[in-house]
Amino acid sequence: RSFLNKIAPNIPEEAPILSVSKGIETSSLYLMTDILKQTCGTERSYAFLSGPSFAREMAMNLATAVVIASDDTQLANDLCQLLSSSTFRCFTSKDVIGVEVG
Image (cartoon, rainbow, N blue to C red; front, side, top):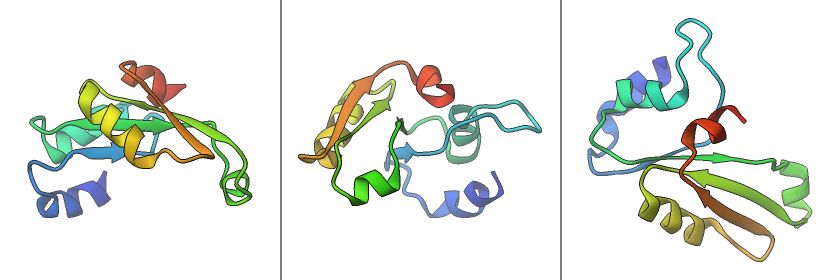
């Protein structure tokens, strides 16, 4: 949260954010969805990426699949198209909470 508070003023208001962090903040029990909206605003679009994916397997060009979840379907589709390759496959979901804690 402290990092986001420091960088938030430098993120253009119209820029969407792709989060690759998941879990629950221990002090507040908030998910990243909540923390991002509190620190970076509620007017932008957010997406959340989750694996399973392992850096070693990706470095070895082994097939990897991830999910990008967002309330903004167009953003999720655009990110999947941008990030996908022959060995890195993205799928979309609207289940942001499931992706964040799953």
